[in-house]
Length: 348
Image (cartoon, rainbow, N blue to C red; front, side, top):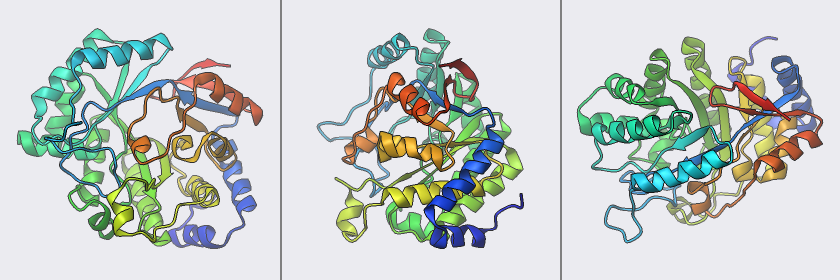
């Protein structure tokens, strides 16, 4: 199949009937995943701190260092969370926090070493590009040095968080203190060269245009052509409650399920070099999350024993392993538990 151009992707988003997009995306999904297996991972978000100086206007989770409810988790609390995860057969922690203004590389190295030595079966999928960027700055190290040192202490892969929209005009409005597009991409490119795989993400539904959404995809696809380091693409809609951005732009509209499924399907068609597309049931709810499997997604993401960031913005959805298995079987696909690297651990 001929590679979809940016203009063709924009045209599909704007004009193609939703059912036709479903059929197109499903056809591509079946060619990539012919056995009809839909995967999920049993993991837990651990937000090691909510202290952050970056002040993203779309975030309701962060706190300033002197706020009464600001925290840094103790090792004991982190261990307690991992013990709970192991009890339900978990294999991964999504480990990220606010960008703490005072924590340097040695703090992160000590923490990773503690977890990887005590819990050798747990994969640490952690530290988004903005965290890597700031650790490098405050520790006076290069991105490469930071990533090498974190990998040596147990870091397995990095999440795509912090991408939002990879267009600096948009970023300057919604997160003016966050690293720019070029540096987000550079963190991931260096990680890939060090054999640290990552995911690519996108948060839409703020002030961006369709053209800027596709520009974001283009940057991800180009980097994937170069490195092959992205394991999956995940997109979700802006959750506005309790955020500064909705106060600044009160006319921002909540994103419909139709819009989510439309963008997801075109993303599946566009990303001919990314194997896995993840459904964002955390923001869309379990049934739209299930419907996403008919619009190109082949992975339901995480059972997410704990989630704090999206819930801070007023959206709370939860799902356990049995619910995921049932939703997948409902559409006549085979549920399978996977690990961080998308290796299948168990089929149901």
